[in-house]
Length: 277
Ligand code: KIV
Image 1: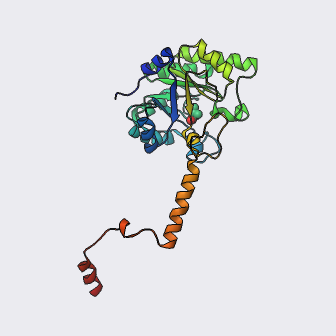
Image 2: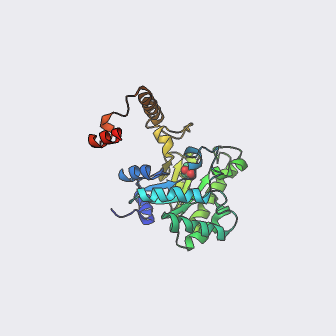
Image 3: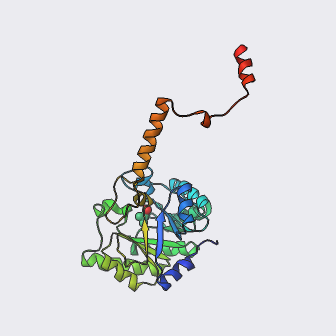
């Protein structure tokens, strides 16, 4: 199967086919996600929270993102893979933005990058796209600005913010972004933005009117400490993992693991000879 391209993703919007996106941060998960045919994988900086245990995404660095993106690239042969540009990897200058976007493509092997912001980052999006690197935008709740926003709050309830979000979406479209994540935006506003722009919107907490949906895989699996309102827990893997760890602990303590079945054999004569030595 050839790898999904940005043209395939654009065509999906035109056909009205919903675009499924999920995060992955490692080889094994990417392999599973790829196997079921999910067309787009995001190596999100959310890994700072769900994999590394930070309070938010701000401590995540380029080196960490490259490390995890490489593992995902090794696991997924078909999905289009987007690397998330971490805090301060693109904000300082356009040169920084281009150089760090290029690291995702050259070092990690992702097909695209994502960055947060609208009108304020449009010049950087344009410069990266002009390098030949597809860019996914991200507006609404932008977690890298959590301190400026005052928390993980729904964005766009006030008329001026709602209008700004539409301006942001248009600016990203004009700058050449191939799609835009809308995070924590009232669903009617997300549907309106989706209607008014030609590139796909990918919602997370933005309702069913978006062209696609993205979710953090730990939330779907039931591995996160906190599962947001907008996520659906398809399993409670944390309970299964707890049971596995406890069973293993008890088996080792009781001496019921390992057994002969889990052990390697050696010719008895060697043991006898060593015993006699
Ligand atoms: O980092 C991430 O996983 C994201 C998604 C929630 C869109 O940005």
